[in-house]
Image (cartoon, rainbow, N blue to C red):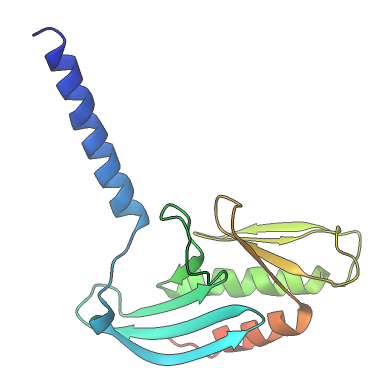
Length: 159
């Protein structure tokens, strides 16, 4: 009996923690509630802008930067933007990254809600920015012209 109570408390705590983590990190929107507004493919990134019906969030912009058939469930390859401040932060980060992309010795690290944008001086020939997920285990490189196209596409979105 002395062992059962602590063991049951452990499982209750584990259940609560797992449930709250899942709610904080996952937003499930049924596909039938997504109405595509625009889509594009820029430099290996798949971009989509949706109008959402029957939800607290009215718009969703998704940027998929590693579109592989099999990705572990705990890994995320998608940037979800649901409001203007998130959109503006990504545009600002991209513009700042673009401003230093030509400078060989400069590095930068910009962090958003579910992305990390990095400019490093390792690959001096290609002048690239790299999108990473929060765990740094999925990445996608984008060149200067793709960054410009991405900024233009994002700036055309109105929430």
